[in-house]
Length: 561
Image (cartoon, rainbow, N blue to C red; front, side, top):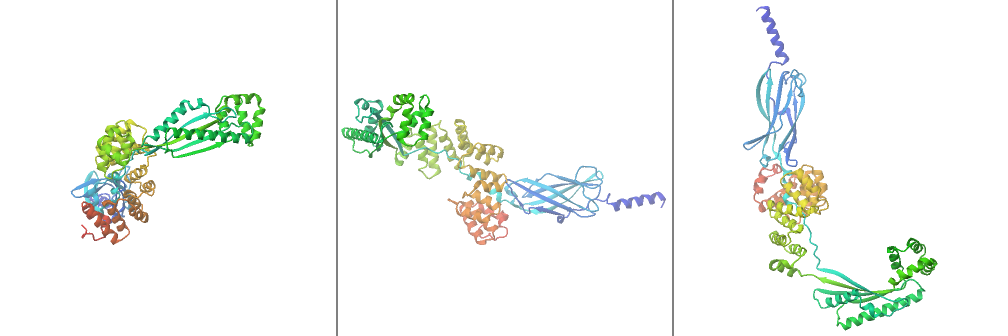
């Protein structure tokens, strides 16, 4: 062997020893750990972190490795973002792994969730570039399955915002008229009985007495004296005005043959300082602030009158403009207007809806139980009152509950065009966006719906579907609905979740399925079996879901399925 050959052989030995020319060995599964394992849905995604711990003398110095995490399920596979790291002698900006010491590499993983991923494998594929050549190493399986409990969040179960009716069966109306008296007089002058307001008051009382839809609840007489003169005199004067007015009212009721008028009550105020103060405050009298200050300084009626009379120039204006208005009796009739009965409203919805107001039609929908019946009433209401946003919004609500989301969206959009500032259509359009997983639009619409009573449930579901489980729990508060219990399970508040599920008013198949999951997480075999059996009874499709659900992997549920 010549000296040149010896040198080349020696050089080759150095290369082999330094780990630069040999191929990279096969990665082993125990080099990797995955958090969480199994993977878990958060919102509508499957995030995870793969940590690679590369041993010493493994990663050759001139190798560059690209790792592609694949989630494999059925005959499909979905790739996450590739991640590249390199040896010490590779020129590049990727993380470096030492040949002598090994190293740790963190690989982020993210997938858009698909229901078929529940039974799956997380595999790492390796592509190596070394010395200008490229080769592939065998894949490594590092995790199995996806816990998909978070994916049970369901926007379609959120109750849309209802635009409430303002129907009142009994509406109280008050009519009044004043009888004014001359100074120090209590007799009623004929002219005071012929004023427009007195004529109208008497007509309202007569009409109510002869109308079965109206009922006179009370007629009240309040009599006053102006606050000049002695208290004793004013007391007798106000009392006499009360008596003369009461006598007039009784005589008029008798003349009109009105016997059903509820209760006739009367009272008098000797010195109407309160009325005096209000009239002065609303007047244009010069120095009225001075008068008001006197009233605030003195509480004794006689002292008040004395001080005000001392303001001689002002008192003349009071005697001319203010005091005459206080010498009066006020007659007030309280009349209840009685609306249509429930039976009549429901009959008219079917036979002659034009005879119903929008509020009566919206109220009618609250009198029926089934959503299909409500849908029919709201459809009629929207046809009869197409410019009332409430009829369109509530029609959309019934369409949403029926699962006709395209029609619901159209109704909500029409309602929003009619009343852009109304919160109910905005919230409901947010629900439509949430169902479509347009989270940006949903967030915008929910922001415009502040004040809608149903908004918290919608926000809680939004946070669930976007992966903020803690915010979802806060938004739901004490709501007793499936989505609220789901948020509590995901934040491991199992005690509260149990209470929430027990409080669901109308439990459905998903209520029982979520309760079975709670049983699994609390290792309660009886809770798993009892509730899963009821869930499958109500919705047979849940059997296939349960068979793949990793929540139940440690329980024998074969007899249920």
